[in-house]
Structure formats: C-alpha cells, structure tokens
Length: 313
Image 1 (cartoon, rainbow, N blue to C red):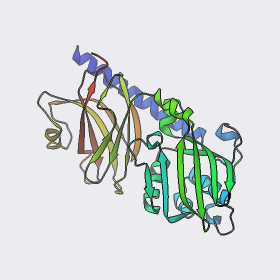
Image 2 (image 1 turned 135 degrees about the vertical axis):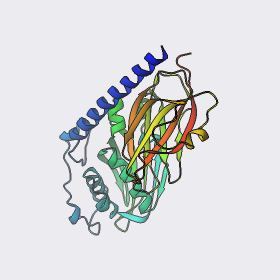
Image 3 (image 1 turned 45 degrees about the vertical axis):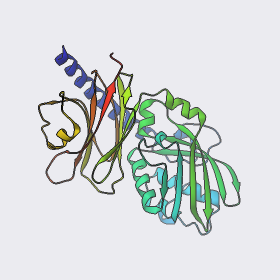
Image 4 (image 1 turned 90 degrees about the horizontal axis):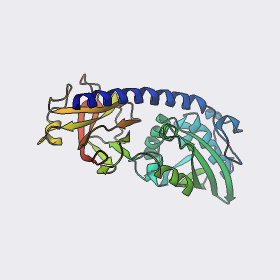
C-alpha cells in the first residue's frame, strides 16, 4: 500500500511540475509588454506605456513621477543595470509583508547591491508591473501598483495590489516603501501553505509552518548568497526512524541514502517554486541542493525540518 502511495505521489509531482512549467511560460508570454501609468486595473496588453530606451535614461531633467515610471519600464524589460542608475547608492526599500512577493526574503534592503540581488530574484520570477500615479507632493510620489509573478500567476491570485511611496532626492530614488493592500492580503490567506527556503553561502534558512493540515504545499526558494551557482533544488524527504538532518548531511551526494524516501523534488534556477502533494503522514524534511559547477550534481547544502503533516490523521 505504501509503495502504491509513493508511486502515485511521484506521478502527481511530475504532472504538477509539467503543468506549472507550462503555466509559467504562458504567463510570461502573456505579460511581455511593459507597463506605464494606468487609471484602472486592466490587462497588461491594454496598458499604455512610457517608452524608455535604456541608453537614453537620465534623471537630470526628469520630474519625480517620470523617474518612477522609467524605473518600472526598465524592470519590465529586465534591464536591471539601467534601472539601478535611477536609485541613490544608499537607497532603502521596505516591504510589508515581504512574503507576498518573495517568501523567505528580507523585508528591508539597503544599498545598490542589496537592491540588485532583490531585482535579480524578481526578474527570475518573470515579474511584470503596472502602476497608477496617485499623488505627487514635491519629491514624494505615491502609486497604486499591480504585480504579476510566477508564484501568484500559478496560484491564480495575480495581480497583487499594493501602495508604493517613493522619495526622490537629486534626481535619484532615495527611499521606497511597498505595502500590500488588504484585498490582496485576503487572497494570500486562501492559498496553500508556503514553505520558503532562502539559500545562503553555507546553508539555507526555512521560513514556514512546522506543521500543516493540507495535502499539499507550495515550495519556493531564492538565493541571497551572491554566488553564481550552476543549479538549485529542494527535495522533500521522509527519514527512517532515528535518522536526523545531521545524518543526511553526512551523505551529501547522489544517490540519496537507502534510509530516506524522496516524495517531491524541484530543480531549477536561483528563484523557483513548485506545488508538492504530500501523500504521507510525515514528518518530512526539506533538503536544500546546489550544483556549484564542480561536477557534483546537486550537493546537499542543508536540511530543514521536521515538518509535521496532520491532514491524514
């Protein structure tokens, strides 16, 4: 019986991964067009955009609202370097709540390099932005912003709506806050639980529940280590009785040891997510994998858990 359940689980994981990949590709293709000012919530291909060529960007003669529009346009084109030229070197970003965009990521960023890493994660998730400038008071610009990303598209809750406030000083964005709307927050409450993994240089950090009461969960991860690794992955494993995360770390290369059973796996780039059906009574462990280009495919970097599964009890 357990063997049949395991085979069923793996088939469902494979089917889900194929369906999710298709959805992500379709969603990215559907939102290729960049965004500009909007006056109501509309589809991306209906939005009039402010055309900005990266080589023409200069904030010296631009109004505060034009600077905000320009950086959104550049991010929608994936041009991080040009967008960062519109920010001050000591820029600060505050997100509330951070899990709405990149679960497991910091809620505060300071400086160009931290902002660059954040933008790289957003671009990897095929972000598209639409904004409506609500108010301009001196150097302060307030917008209503709509965000599409792979995770929210896949969950069927895109776009997320937020209020952004930009402070412009000397032609550069000095500070910026992003606050999710109550309506979008309610959307997130109805989604499956999210297991968020943040990859660091020497390990990973888990941000999520220690027990769940649903037959599935969303696994998401991103990398803040600053290292350019060749690949990433997360496996969901069941350990034999008496085995611990420390035991798993002692056997870091494939194939996994005989005393562990893999019931879910996702292998992708530095920012990814997948829906994992959990046909087990647990506990489960999340095993962080990396390919550092040394010929050791997806070495175990860290192990998080246990996470209890209460749905089947």
